[in-house]
Length: 98
Image (cartoon, rainbow, N blue to C red):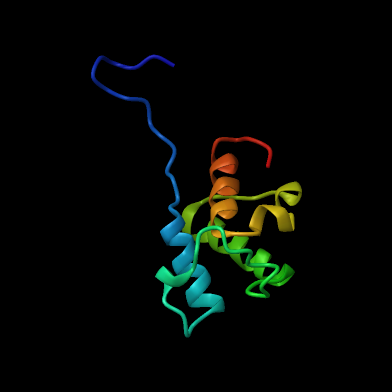
């Protein structure tokens, strides 16, 4: 794709780990400050989320950020932590397979 000089091609909108952590805490850990949630904390192993939580996060990504995840992307491994959720969302935005 070519652009006019000085005009950059449109970049993908990136979702931040902070945005994801805020949602996870608001939805699943209401008595915790979002800053206390480590980006690599295993949300599944610690019981913060379960399979229904995975679907709730996927729905939030679609509604709030326009990031649609398909069946193969809705695996527990892609939602294990804030960091893996962000990586999954970025791959989906880029059109990659999770």
